Each structure stands twice: as structure tokens, then as C-alpha cells.
Image (cartoon, rainbow, N blue to C red; front, side, top):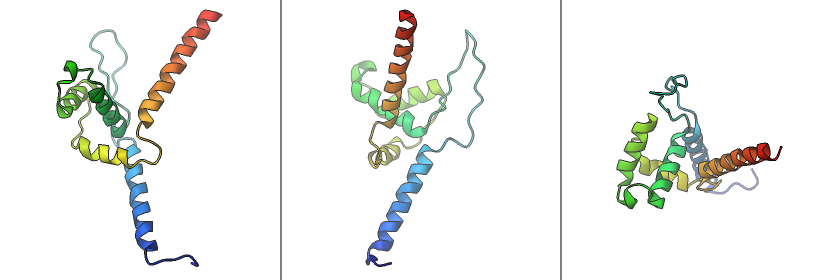
Length: 130
């Protein structure tokens, strides 16, 4: 190629590694647990989002200090949330590092949550107007 430099190979490798990390991070889990049918009592909520989305939510809740007046460690908070949602994250700090490397922003999941909630509220408001 005309623009080939001594560092082109290294840059290509870094870009490929970054793309691979992103694909692995946002790929759906290989095996998702069976979700129980909806029922009034004893229903279990199972996390079916990505691990990155779970970590994004957990870090956000920790940063907002909405549990135990902020006096809970991140690991304890993620463990409690994990038990509630049926998910276990072995290394949340590594996942945060991957989130920090995102090119699309740090809050992809939170932005999606906000948009979904606003859409839900808009749908309720539209029903009231009819």
C-alpha cells in the first residue's frame, strides 16, 4: 500500500483486538438460563442483557449511592444484584476497563434505558389523551 508505515501492522493489530473485545463484550451469552413463565408468586427475574450492561448499571447505582446510603462496596453490590438477577461477574474491573475503551460512549445501556422509559411514559400519556 502507498501509505504503509512501520507502525501500520501494530495499529492494525490494536484495531483488530479492540474490535474483538467489543464483539465478545456485547455478544449474547452462549447459554441463557431458562426464563420461568410469568406468575404472581415465586417469579424469578433473570438477567438476559450483556455483562457490560449489567456492570454499567451496577457502577451507576454505586456512584448514585442509592444502596445503604452509599456505604456498600462495588463487589458486594454486584454480588447482591447478581443473586437477584441470576448473573455472576468474575471481574467487574476488567469489564469497566472495556467500557472505558468504548468509542460509542460510556453509557450505552443507560442511554437505552432512558429512551425506553421515556417511550413507556409517552405511550401512557398518549393513552390518556385519547
